[in-house]
Image (tube, rainbow over all chains, first blue to last red; front, side, top):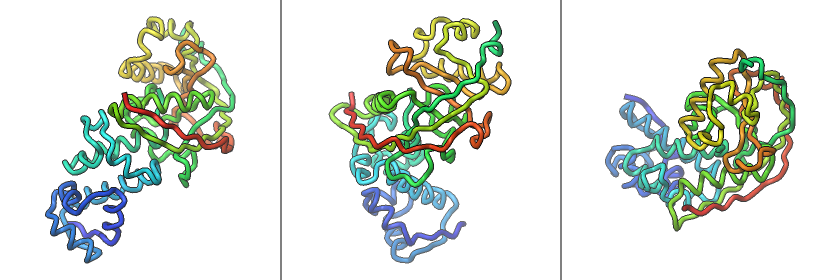
Length: 112
Length: 180
C-alpha cells in the first residue's frame, strides 16, 4: 500500500476535462473512490493505483505545458498514435503511458 | 576513407523550440530520450535536435502533427523559438554523400523516410565513431534543399556548458496543422 495526497485531484481532473467516472476508469478504481479522495485530500491505496495517479498528474502538467489554453482540444482530438482514439478515450481505457508518450513527443518538438 | 576520418568540427547558430510560456530552458534535458519518433535517435538515446531555420522548425513539427491527427481535425500550437550557438568538435555530415558511402549505405534519399532505418543508421554511426558528438542531417521536409538541415547532438557525448552558448529568444510562432 502507498499513502498518497489527492488534494489536487479535482484540479487535475478538471484540467483534463474528465468526469469522475472517466478518471475512475483510468485509475481502475470505483467512481466512489475518486469522489471520496477528492473530498478527503489523501488516502492509502495500492502501489499500482498510486503509480496511475502520478501518471495522470504528469499528463495534466505536460498537457498544460504543451497546449496551454488548448488542453480541451488536445483531449478531444483523435490521433493515429492512440489507435485513432482521443487522449480522453485512451485514458478512460487505462492507456495512460500512451497519452504521456504523445505529449512528450510533442514537448521538445517533432523532428523529421 | 573511414567514418572517423570524415568527422569534422562544426559551429553555427541553430534553432530549437519549446512550448510558448514553458518555464523550462530550451536546453532542458529532462525528457530527452523518452520521445520514440525522433528520426536520428532511438528511444532511450538522449539527443537534442536543432534546425537550420525557422521555416524548417515549423514544417517538421507540422508534418508530424498532420500525420498523427486524423483528417477533419486540426491542432494549434504556440511555440517559442530560440537561437542557440553550438560548437561541436566531432560531427558527421550526412548531407555529404561521401559520409553515406563510407557507411556502406545507398543514397540517403532512398532510406531517409524510413524511421527504423534512420534510427539504426544513427546507432551504427555512434557505435563506429568514438566520441561522436552529433550528426548534420537532411530535413525530410526539404529533401530537395540541401542547405536546410537538422543538427542532432547526443547529450551523453557532450558537456552542454562547453558545446552550447546561451539561448536567445528569437520569437514565438503559431503552428496550425490539419490532420490528413
